[in-house]
Image (tube, rainbow, N blue to C red):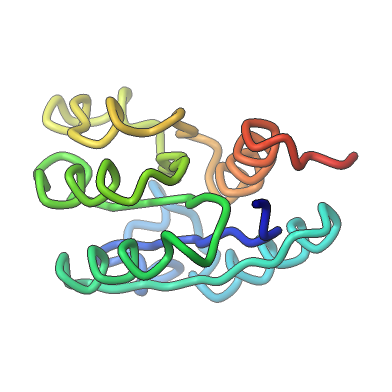
Length: 150
């Protein structure tokens, strides 16, 4: 059953957006990104819940809780993208469609960022478009679930 709800899950250090490495991540704050995400989702007639944590276990707990509440997840796991088998297993366990999101083009950065442990268990990846990656991710997720109403 479609619920018309998306979870936007944000990993470590994303709470510092707008202040850290603005040449890489831009100068928009996490709150600013969330405002744009909420507005875009509202135009698509879906609700969005946002959650950010610097703690791997909190992200896993929120994913587990989401399995009965949302149609899908946009997930910017930050550095955990490249290191967390636990998050990979949690994505698999909840059986929700997940779109992996990155503000920067991780493939144009350091070699260690080129490999994601999460990509194989996600329906797709949007990277390199700054805050617009989230909006593209919403449309991709809604298209995947058959909810895209343009």
